Every structure is written in C-alpha cells, then in structure tokens.
Amino acid sequence: MAAVLASPWTTWSIAGLATAGVIIRPFSWPEFVWAVAGAALLVGLRLLNPTDALAGVTKGTDVYLFLTGMMLLSELARQEGLFDWLAAAAAGMAKGSATRLFTLVFAVGTIVTVFLSNDATAVVLTPAVAAVAKAVQAKNPLPYLFICAFIANAASFVLPISNPANLVIYGSHMPPLLQWLPRYALPSALSILATYFVLRWTQIADLRKPVSADIDRPELSGAGRMAAAGIALTAIVLLVSSGFDIQLGLPTFLAGIGTAILVLIRSKCGVVNVMKNISWGVLPLVAGLFVLVEALQLTGVTQDLAFLLQDLVRRSATLAAWASGGLLAIACNLVNNLPVGLVSGRVVEMARVPDQVRSAVLIGVDLGPNLSVTGSLATILWLTALRREGYSVSAWTFLKLGVLVMPPALVLAIAGAFAFG
Image 1 (cartoon, rainbow, N blue to C red):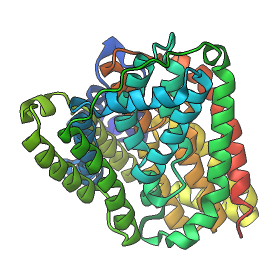
Image 2: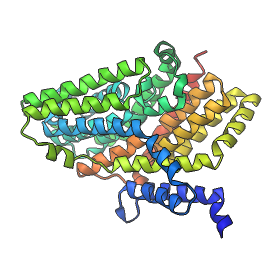
Image 3: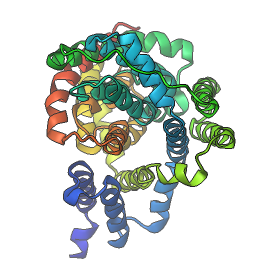
C-alpha cells in the first residue's frame, strides 16, 4: 500500500481529481475548495512535504498581489458608479445598434487586455459590460459578456504584460519590447480578428435585435473619477514595470491600495463594504494550483517533457512548434493554463528551444484556454464576476462556443508566428 501511495501516478491522480473538481464544481462548491483539498491531500498522504507545499504557495506571491490590486480597483469602480457611467456612454455611442455595441465592447476589451492584462479584463470589464447590457435593455446579454472571456485570452500576447503567463514562459529571458512587438504583432492581429468574426457570427441572431439608445447618463462623482484615474494610472505603471523587467504584482497591489485610499477619502462607501464584496476565494484557488504544480514537478515530469521536446526539435522545429502549440492548447483546458504555463516555462527553458517553438508554446498557453470555462484563470475570474451579476454559463454552453471560436484563431496565430524570422 505504501508503494502505491508513493507512486507518481498517485500524485497525478490527485492533481487530476482536484482539477476536475475545479472544472465541474460538484455540489456547486466554489472552485478554490477543490484546489485546496487536492493540495491538502497531497500533504496529508506525505506525497508532498509541508516545506515544498509552502514553497509552491510562495511562488504565487506575485499573482496574489496582482489579483488583489485588480479586484480592489474593480470593486472601487463598481461602488463609485464608474461602470454605470461607462455603460451609459457606450449605449449612447451604439445608437440603438446591437452590432455596433458588440464591436465597441470588443474594441474596449482588446485595449483593456493589452494594457492591463487578461485577468483585469475579466475582473474590471465584465461588471462594466453587464451594466451596459442592462442599460440598453438587451434581451440576451451573453453575446456581450462572452466578449470579456474570449478577448481576455485572444489579445493576451500583444504585450508581455497582457498575460502573466508570458512572464512565466520567458522567465529571465524576456525579449525587449522592440523584439516582442514584431514577433507577436501578426499572431496577435490574426488571433483578435479571427475571434471577433467567429464570435460575432455565432451571436448574429441576438445582434439583429435592436437595443435601447435612450439612456440617461448619470453624473460621475469625484470619487468615481478618482477610481477611473487609478485604473488608468495602473496601466501606465504596468507598462513601465514591464519595460524595466519588474514583476507586476507589487506595483499593481500598491496602485490598488493608493487608489483605494484616495477614493475612500472622498467616498461614502466604507472600507468594510469594499472588502466584503471582493471575491477572495480566487486567492486560495491560485495557491492550491501552485501547490499541485509543485507536486507534479517533483515527480520529474518537467525533465521528461524537456527531453521529449528536445528530441522533437531535432527532428523538425516546425513540427515541434505546431505540436507544442496544439497540445498545450488542449492541455490548458484539461488542467488550467496557470499550472500548464508554469510547467511549460520550465520545460522550454530546460530544452533551450528555438524562438518559433517558444512562440508557439506561448500562443498555445495564452489562446488555447478559449475552449473551456476553466482553461485560464481569467475565464474563472470571468465566471466569478458573472455570478456576482446574477448570470451563469454552463461548461457545456461555453464549450459549444469555444470549439468554434478557439481553433481558427489558434491555427492562424501559430501560422503568423512563422512569418517572423
């Protein structure tokens, strides 16, 4: 019995069951319950010692800080009416056209993802879009809300800061911005355009229905303007931090804290109201996933995968790029792109792969999650934001849409990566 428990297969089985719990959410329990339970079981069965588990938790420090800062900014903006104000502005610009509103939301989602990251799109933009759909009296708000999930991943490799996974995959070998832009400009453009046209095509029935254009535009308070300035300043801070190769977590956290102090001085909302409305369960979810990854790495899987990748590159770098990108895109939806990104970053570093293979790996990890609801942390955050707004999307509903949206964008993006160098 002890030999069975000590087997790497036991670790893999527990990690797989924990991930399945995150995806399926049995008994409607929150995602973090299953991730934390899997991590605790690994420690309880002595498959992972407490020191290594703690090391896994601490590796996520930058992510915790980043998410805390973004969730704080989002909640401040929501409570101060910034989202309602933006909703009225968007409704006015749409002039009663659902298609125009769809395109407008997609463009804003692209900008938010590029300059604030895909997680910020899920956390900050989703409640704003929900407010837009409500303001224009859309009969079905999901076409607009789906944008927040799909563009969060489709535009997440325009800049290094557009997805924290980019920093994980490149690690200390992050190319300068002037090298990054030409390398990923065409793949990003193809990914974004393919996602837009396929998503719009799938939602065409709802987009033929008119939306209201007669919307009263509320006045934005001083605290609301301060929240908007804080979000804009955070985007600048992230760009500067990326330029100086500084991890994004602490700057985002400090920007969120600084904005909160300035906003709450002028606001009627207290600290307690802000804190109780933040979805804190996301943090233990991430911590649990980091522990699961730590356990998997200790089984030697990264070394085995690095050897396999090296062998494939020796046979054909082109085949290695397509195989890596495609397989990782699928793997993200089975496991979540956070652990997949962590393992992939280590594997490509050990294998010392050509740039085109690394680009395909990054595209697979960033874009592949558009297939399922738990493919990326951003999509899980999107689901959490949806529930807060009173909406729900089943795994099957998302999968039926994702299987149409993701593959064309993935194929075009990887093909675009070959156009550089």
